[in-house]
Length: 141
Image (cartoon, rainbow, N blue to C red; front, side):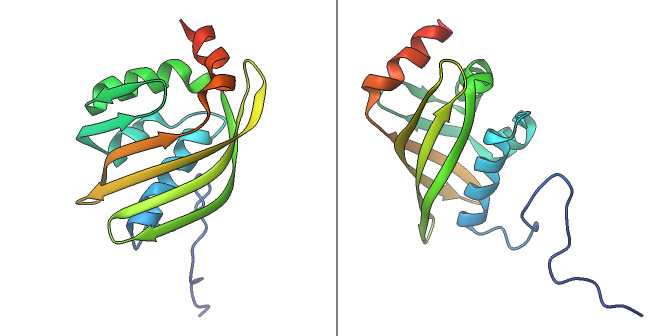
Protein backbone atom coordinates (compact mmCIF):
# COMPACT_ATOMS: atom_id res chain seq x y z
CA UNK A 1 0.00 0.00 0.00
CA UNK A 2 1.39 3.38 -1.04
CA UNK A 3 1.82 6.04 1.61
CA UNK A 4 -0.19 9.27 1.08
CA UNK A 5 1.87 12.34 0.18
CA UNK A 6 2.95 14.59 3.04
CA UNK A 7 1.29 17.60 1.43
CA UNK A 8 -1.78 16.52 -0.56
CA UNK A 9 -2.48 18.47 -3.71
CA UNK A 10 -5.58 20.64 -3.70
CA UNK A 11 -6.63 21.61 -7.24
CA UNK A 12 -7.99 25.02 -6.29
CA UNK A 13 -5.58 26.08 -3.57
CA UNK A 14 -1.86 25.86 -3.02
CA UNK A 15 -1.70 25.50 0.74
CA UNK A 16 -2.63 22.48 2.83
CA UNK A 17 -5.43 23.37 5.27
CA UNK A 18 -3.41 22.72 8.46
CA UNK A 19 -1.88 24.20 10.44
CA UNK A 20 -3.68 27.50 10.02
CA UNK A 21 -1.05 29.75 11.51
CA UNK A 22 -1.45 33.52 11.14
CA UNK A 23 1.01 33.40 8.22
CA UNK A 24 -0.99 30.66 6.47
CA UNK A 25 -4.25 32.56 6.99
CA UNK A 26 -2.76 35.69 5.39
CA UNK A 27 -1.35 33.60 2.52
CA UNK A 28 -4.82 32.11 1.98
CA UNK A 29 -6.29 35.64 1.96
CA UNK A 30 -3.77 36.77 -0.67
CA UNK A 31 -4.40 33.71 -2.82
CA UNK A 32 -8.17 34.23 -2.72
CA UNK A 33 -7.89 37.94 -3.50
CA UNK A 34 -5.42 37.68 -6.36
CA UNK A 35 -6.83 34.65 -8.18
CA UNK A 36 -8.04 35.40 -11.70
CA UNK A 37 -11.57 34.73 -10.45
CA UNK A 38 -11.77 36.24 -6.99
CA UNK A 39 -12.94 33.91 -4.24
CA UNK A 40 -15.00 36.40 -2.25
CA UNK A 41 -16.57 33.67 -0.06
CA UNK A 42 -13.11 32.51 1.04
CA UNK A 43 -12.07 36.13 1.68
CA UNK A 44 -15.11 36.84 3.80
CA UNK A 45 -14.54 33.68 5.87
CA UNK A 46 -11.00 34.80 6.71
CA UNK A 47 -12.10 38.19 8.07
CA UNK A 48 -13.57 38.84 11.51
CA UNK A 49 -16.99 40.47 11.48
CA UNK A 50 -15.44 43.48 13.25
CA UNK A 51 -12.63 43.69 10.64
CA UNK A 52 -11.01 47.11 10.22
CA UNK A 53 -9.12 48.33 7.17
CA UNK A 54 -6.96 51.43 6.97
CA UNK A 55 -5.03 52.60 3.92
CA UNK A 56 -3.76 55.83 2.38
CA UNK A 57 -6.97 56.33 0.38
CA UNK A 58 -9.73 54.52 2.28
CA UNK A 59 -10.82 53.31 5.71
CA UNK A 60 -13.50 50.70 6.47
CA UNK A 61 -15.11 49.56 9.71
CA UNK A 62 -16.66 46.10 9.53
CA UNK A 63 -16.29 43.12 7.22
CA UNK A 64 -19.41 43.96 5.18
CA UNK A 65 -18.20 47.45 4.22
CA UNK A 66 -14.77 46.14 3.22
CA UNK A 67 -16.25 43.25 1.21
CA UNK A 68 -18.49 45.66 -0.73
CA UNK A 69 -15.44 47.74 -1.60
CA UNK A 70 -13.23 44.86 -2.75
CA UNK A 71 -16.03 43.35 -4.81
CA UNK A 72 -16.19 46.66 -6.66
CA UNK A 73 -12.45 47.02 -7.23
CA UNK A 74 -11.61 43.31 -7.42
CA UNK A 75 -11.81 42.97 -11.22
CA UNK A 76 -9.19 45.71 -11.57
CA UNK A 77 -6.66 43.85 -9.45
CA UNK A 78 -4.23 41.80 -11.51
CA UNK A 79 -1.51 40.24 -9.41
CA UNK A 80 1.19 40.77 -6.86
CA UNK A 81 4.80 39.70 -6.65
CA UNK A 82 5.58 38.83 -3.04
CA UNK A 83 8.91 40.18 -1.81
CA UNK A 84 8.59 38.75 1.68
CA UNK A 85 6.29 37.72 4.50
CA UNK A 86 7.23 38.17 8.15
CA UNK A 87 5.19 36.72 10.99
CA UNK A 88 5.48 37.12 14.74
CA UNK A 89 2.76 35.97 17.08
CA UNK A 90 -0.60 37.16 15.76
CA UNK A 91 0.93 39.78 13.42
CA UNK A 92 1.94 39.30 9.78
CA UNK A 93 3.66 41.79 7.47
CA UNK A 94 3.61 41.31 3.70
CA UNK A 95 5.80 43.22 1.28
CA UNK A 96 4.88 42.99 -2.38
CA UNK A 97 4.78 44.69 -5.76
CA UNK A 98 1.22 45.38 -6.90
CA UNK A 99 0.02 45.29 -10.54
CA UNK A 100 -3.42 46.46 -11.66
CA UNK A 101 -5.34 45.49 -14.78
CA UNK A 102 -7.40 48.64 -15.45
CA UNK A 103 -5.74 51.04 -15.73
CA UNK A 104 -2.45 49.26 -16.14
CA UNK A 105 -0.20 50.47 -13.35
CA UNK A 106 2.61 48.85 -11.50
CA UNK A 107 4.64 47.53 -10.17
CA UNK A 108 3.93 49.60 -7.07
CA UNK A 109 5.59 48.64 -3.77
CA UNK A 110 3.04 47.83 -1.05
CA UNK A 111 3.37 46.86 2.60
CA UNK A 112 0.49 45.28 4.51
CA UNK A 113 0.24 44.77 8.26
CA UNK A 114 -2.27 42.15 9.43
CA UNK A 115 -3.43 41.43 12.97
CA UNK A 116 -5.27 38.19 13.66
CA UNK A 117 -7.37 36.87 16.53
CA UNK A 118 -9.05 33.47 16.80
CA UNK A 119 -7.93 32.45 13.29
CA UNK A 120 -9.49 35.54 11.65
CA UNK A 121 -7.98 38.73 10.29
CA UNK A 122 -9.21 41.55 12.56
CA UNK A 123 -7.29 44.39 10.96
CA UNK A 124 -5.30 45.22 7.87
CA UNK A 125 -3.29 48.38 7.44
CA UNK A 126 -1.99 49.10 3.95
CA UNK A 127 0.99 51.32 3.14
CA UNK A 128 1.89 52.64 -0.33
CA UNK A 129 2.55 55.83 -2.28
CA UNK A 130 -0.99 56.79 -3.29
CA UNK A 131 -0.09 59.25 -6.05
CA UNK A 132 0.11 56.67 -8.86
CA UNK A 133 -2.69 54.56 -7.39
CA UNK A 134 -5.18 57.46 -7.40
CA UNK A 135 -5.98 56.79 -11.08
CA UNK A 136 -7.22 53.28 -10.23
CA UNK A 137 -9.61 54.48 -7.52
CA UNK A 138 -10.83 57.40 -9.68
CA UNK A 139 -11.76 54.93 -12.42
CA UNK A 140 -14.04 53.00 -10.03
CA UNK A 141 -16.24 55.93 -9.01
